[in-house]
Length: 283
Image (cartoon, rainbow, N blue to C red; front, side, top):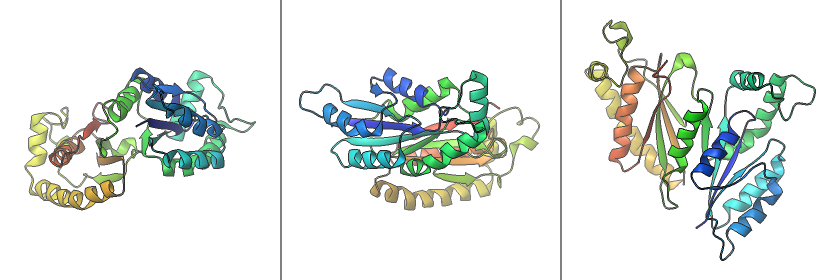
């Protein structure tokens, strides 16, 4: 069965880097593809005798929304496995990236960069809503983005089930834009206020032992486990391909790191290959 990944997203959010990572994984990549040609490419890739099994289609910033929506619906209706990857980032970071590289925004038409980004973001909201997975590149460098793409697409087979990511983060660094579920861990006792534990992280045994010894931690994980019992089968039944659970504490270094590791264990116990990411542990 043919596989297609359609890469869309905001200009400056990393479409090219994501495409390069997929190309390194052996995907056949077509950059800046007009939506009107998606059906033709799919037809050629699925034709008898074709040696192309995995195709990544990068949608450029000037693609018409109506045409893109129609083409995606047609592609999803085919026999191929189709996933839409949407790259997002905060306005502040996008402005900085264009400033640092001295590139003009491809949709800039005499208006300021902030206004152009806001206009592009509003226009892409329907595409983002249809995406199978959203990756927030605000805090990712090119190497981290490559690692994320490899984790998402590098080891899958057409028969793979829902892929899960458990992400720890710090609220003071901003909410992750690509989370499906966000859980606040700031009610748990904070190792930051223990002098010996402050320089350590949730990956250190002493911090884990501290967080896990409190009764509210045990009860919290028990109730979260029951919630997963309710949600996961329903997500699978609805055909969801990716699920990102984000767990946050103040700085993203202690409590959320410990709890994320425990949640990943709960998912793996249920047969999901959870990808564990600590976004802010090094800050």
